[in-house]
Image (spheres, rainbow, N blue to C red):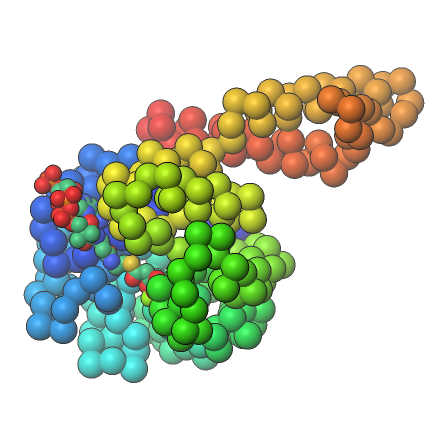
Length: 285
Ligand SMILES: CC(C)(COP(=O)(O)OP(=O)(O)OC[C@H]1O[C@@H](n2cnc3c(N)ncnc32)[C@H](O)[C@@H]1OP(=O)(O)O)[C@@H](O)C(=O)NCCC(=O)NCCSC(=O)C[C@H](O)C(=O)O
Ligand SMILES: [Mg+2]
């Protein structure tokens, strides 16, 4: 599957059972929405949540926000019905929880056809199989499920996420090797802006495309953290200009702010400007 190029800085979970939240999302500044039929919905509510979601998507009004439906696992009583229903709801992608191997994605594709697939990466087995999962031909994005992963790893919460690093790193390597998008896990303490910002900045530093979110209050911080900063844009422009100038004089290495600039740095600079343009285009729609 070709790489998704649209911004995915802020990816907001909305429980499909919550009509008020489903409505509110029509006006929120998120790049993507995950309409959740899985963990945010109790077993008793699941069939009704599926119907509520179908009605909300039929009504529409979500504009250019990328629409992803998280179904229940295919090994649950709801998964197969969720998948069949989700395939008819006009979603941009379908997200499968607790993916363990490419075979899980094959099983989903049999039900939903050629709709792009997203995979929750949230078990130790998934971390070890990340490369094979990322190589699946229909996979568009990986989403870190850091709550489930923490549970299975029996880790304690740490602000620096040290216990998570091996898993996050394996998934990042796999996603980048196979041109998949990769979205970081949620920050549970949705009233702790400082902690959320710190985790967003860490995720951006590591190379994630964006962060999954659980509350509208987390949107602004994520959008800022995963957008190119003014300083990054300024540097990118100066690097491109400097290399063009030096190449015109027959040399291949420029120096900007005391650091070398070669073709590979200019490739990154161009990606920064392309990201800025993509965000501007999204905001203009
Ligand atoms: C955490 C919440 C239960 C808090 O809800 P609430 O008490 O209603 O919050 P507020 O009163 O502050 O809400 C203010 C308004 O914002 C709307 N709202 C709240 N949350 C959302 C949302 N996620 N999307 C859209 N709108 C939202 C409220 O309706 C209020 O609106 P209004 O009254 O009109 O002003 C709640 O935020 C929540 O349920 N969040 C989502 C939780 C969730 O999705 N969990 C599952 C995903 S996390 C996960 O599973 C990750 C992974 O699998 C892993 O393993 O890590
Ligand atoms: Mg989970």
